[in-house]
Image (cartoon, rainbow, N blue to C red; front, side, top):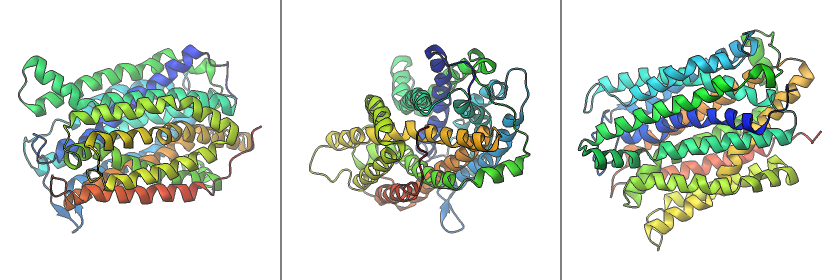
Length: 447
């Protein structure tokens, strides 16, 4: 049970944190492959060699996977510390406060390679900065998300607060996706000719803004007043075992993993799809992402109503099905008998509803799972549940970025784009897998 009922002003303060860390993580997801392995018509210098390791994986995919793997293994550790914390400010806020600066700093350094050209030194530098960034970001994200079930009492409150969170998340996506647009503005206003430098200045500004926003809940949300969770007593490994023992939770995890892997493919590939498959300027990518997430906001009231009327599970299943069809359309981008703008804007507008529902409902569903477990076991392990979730989210994102980077071997340039199109097939398969696994999920009846 939560402490005092959370007023609207404090809900907004809490949700602001999601926008901040969304700006940082989506800057990495959207810009990293494009910055280090740009298409030939991007005006950027490739920074890591397209060498094959073990005969199948290129350098960027291995670096991306290794950085997120270390971070994913760190998740349960920080969750256990947070769940058991007895700090005077609460179990979550102290971790959030100390994580902001290093997360912003290492995001910034990720886009400052040691050599301006293809070099393995850049690959090593990227591996180090990514590990340190994701570990720092996790120290904020896991405690932050663990507050959700602790400050809400009913499923309706969870869905509402999760909706506010998702507004923050999509605003962060928009700001990050507009990186090329901000860089264009810097080049035009300040007469900057170096595109790499313009992007670095842009990302530096985004990191500063994200840090300030992440500090809003860290300093202006009173955890002691609104959250009544008690410190857990289980040690790390017993807590992990008990969390995984929840059979219903496993179906949730596998579907979430598949979805985030698919989402990372489209996030990493958006600028390539725009520039290579459709022949549009990369600045169009930010406008497309903005259109998609703003359109998704229109569906938030409908998602809340449908979840209350038909249940969260049915809405999620429908969304996975629709998203799988949209991934098939990516395979044929640039080949439809209509203009490129019509093709891509039809695609992103159609994706708005599934992105809205899959942004809002999974966190609310997980909060229900964690709260039900707390009632039955008497142990408050919200942090561990969200840590395990984000372990799978990060593994999905990691493998999504790695898969995208790997497929660039088979073509990422105009006239040689097979690798980009194969991402549509992979996304389709992943969304179908998510649908099949989540169909086994047993939704709790309203209390």
